[in-house]
Length: 269
Image (cartoon, rainbow, N blue to C red; front, side, top):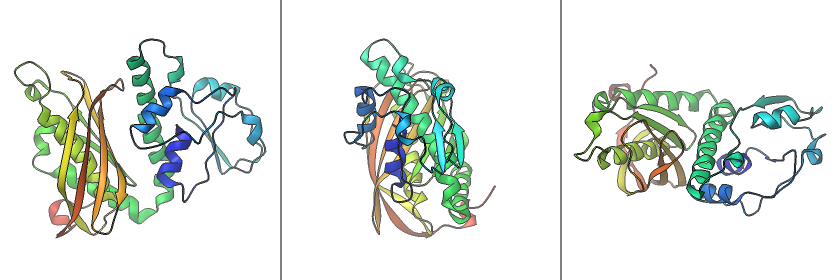
């Protein structure tokens, strides 16, 4: 999944390979949860580490504790990271429970890839753009009520909202408008991450509700599927903290005539 994510996000800038301590098969759950965000793993195969042992990698990343303990030294690698991510393949249970574990791992991988690989390679000016957008979002009057968190990276954004009782409808679940807000906000700022001069506008946005939630945290992740000269198409997913899929959304965002300025909150905190 990590190989597919990095290749999808920045295949023009990184050459990416993956391998494990034992060659098996690409799990069907991995194929499913990656296809949900438009990434096809059909061209990937399970490989063992010895194939790459002496490659001159800039970075080697181990993604679970067992792999880190068993991973040999890569003598020609410049740097090595370890990300302690629970192995979703170890989860036993129903198909939905297994898929939730793989979604949770995918979300963790996405966040770490953006924060530790893509952002350091993005350059100071672009990182400043992301931080200014985050400040603009947090300072918007409407967010005094929702109190969200946001993380913006290249062509992607993640919005979190902690569920409170005032978000409930009469039956005790979170109102669909909160689902919509979280998804639209994440997709909106994923779109604005690739537009550095003007504010973007939501042209259209549709969501599909999958399951209810009444407590915990809403986690919305948006990613740009297509970026054109005047518009972006962005897809989003909403999950709970266990990786369960709550809703999906997709929309089109267009450039406005309003330049990004400090007056609208577009500034460093």
